[in-house]
Every structure is written in structure tokens, then in C-alpha cells.
Length: 166
Length: 192
Picture 1 (tube, each protein chain N blue to C red):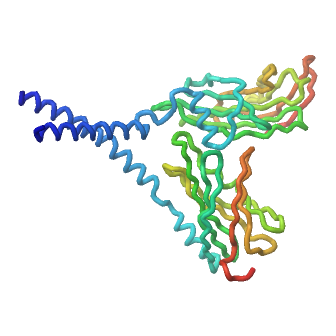
Picture 2 (picture 1 turned 90 degrees about the horizontal axis):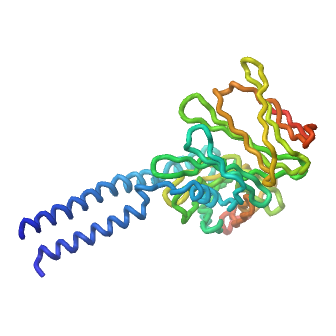
């Protein structure tokens, strides 16, 4: 009887150990994949342009079942850079967010194409930063537009901190 | 209940929980079971489609790729899925290309290579002009100068797909043509 109990315990624990050994490398890899890869460096690189005004945005729009969020905007004397996150519910075969297709539309109607975008894939979607050249006419806000195929979304982006003039 | 029994139950609960995690994380099956499923996920993961599949083509060079020719509203695509360890995966070309209705035919192309020096090309498109019965792609061999035309008859789905494998850069692309039933050239676009 005791022998049987011991065999039972051995069997149970073997399964437990095997499962743990399968899961640990998976989660370690996911953790290393998800670590912030260079967004901070990109933001530091913006300082080469001169004074950087960082403004928190935190506004979202849905694309199908997923969510695009403009997290913050960095305005420098040379460019406007927008940091974003993209959260997706789909787990398999998700493409990196096509950030180059984003446009920044100014209140006077000028549409700026992105001139640079960096996107990192994560287990839950993507994070990235997309930058635009300065518009011809300065404004205190603009609209970030996603318009690809028949999907459309937009968010209002402040370009000056509250209380400052244009 | 004695202590051993409680231990055993707790450990079985852990086993169950971990098993659920293994299944949820798709550790053993990171891909899809069928090429169709991978194709659908590839499109929804790109926020395009779902396209109408007009043709499913197994790539003859190695049995690891399937191309789905399809249209969605004003776009056409040749989404490719690849079989690897763990199932079928998105393999590129998911993005739809706009159909230019002012032109007799719209086309797009792309290449991919599997490690060695061979390049797999696909040249595909959508025919808007219904007088076009045949689409012809003209390539010449760079070494011999020999012309190798590829032809495809256009059916109701209006799409065409040419595939070929070549040593990188061994062919010169000449033109794509649309011919009517009598063989007259209705449309010609020089390439390369």
C-alpha cells in the first residue's frame, strides 16, 4: 500500500516538474521579448534636436477588436514624435503595427507623412514611435490618423502644454 | 483525511493548472492547424479583409507554402502561409494592392528565398478589362538572352499568378501583357 502511494507521488511530481520545465523557458523568453527595447534611447536621441517638450496624451481608438493608443508626444525644434502602444487580442500571426501609414493632419489641413517609425513586437501587440517633420504652420494641436484599407481611426494630439500659447 | 492525501490533491490541482497554461500559451502548437486558418489570422492580424478567396495555390517548389489569391472590396492580394514546425504561419504578402480600374490590369510582385541562393518569385494581379483572355509575363535569361514567356488564361475570378524559382538575378524582366482571344496585345507594361 505504501509502495503504491510512493509510486503515485513520484508520478505526480514528475509531471509537475516536466510542466514547470516546459513553462519556465517560455515565460523567460516572453519576458525578454517584452522588455522595452530602445524606446528610451529614441527619446534620448530626440534631445539632439534641442529642447524637447514631452506631453502625455493617453488617447485611444479601436481598429477592429484591437486598440491603438497614442501615449505621449515629443515636440522638438525639428520634428514631432509620437510614442504609441498597440494592444491586440489575437495571439497568432499578428503583424507589427504598420506605423509608417499613420498621418498627422494639421488644423489647416496639411497632412504630414511619417518620415521615420520604429516598432517593437511584444506578446500583447506592439510599442513604437513614429515621427513627422514640422508642419508649415505651427498649431497647438493636430490629428493622428490611421486610414488603411477600410479601417479608420484618429486621435487628437496636443502639441503645446496646457497654458502655453501657440 | 490524512496529510498525504491532501498533498496529493493539491499537487494534482497544480498539475491541472499548469496543463491549462501550457494549452493556453500554445507552446506545442504556435501555428495554425490548417493553411486557411493561418491565412485568416494573417489578414485579421493586419486589419485587412477578410478577403474572398478566389484560388488556393500550393507552391510547387517544396510543399511548404500555400498562396491564397483573393479580393476584398477594391484590393487584391496573394497572401502566403508557410508550414513550419508547430503548424501553419503567416508568411507575407498579406497587404492588399489597390485595383486600378482605369488600367486593363493591375499587378504586384514579391520574392522570398529559403536560405540558399534560389529566389521564389510570384507575380500576380487582377484584370479589369474583360476583353483580356490571357495574361503573359515575359522574362529573358540573362546569360543566353532566351525569352521565356509565361501565360495564364483568365477565368471568371479575373486573377492571375505566375511563380518561378530562379538563381537570384538570373532573369531580366521584360514586360507584362494582356491579350485578347485572338492574341492581339491590348495592354503592355514594360518592366525592369
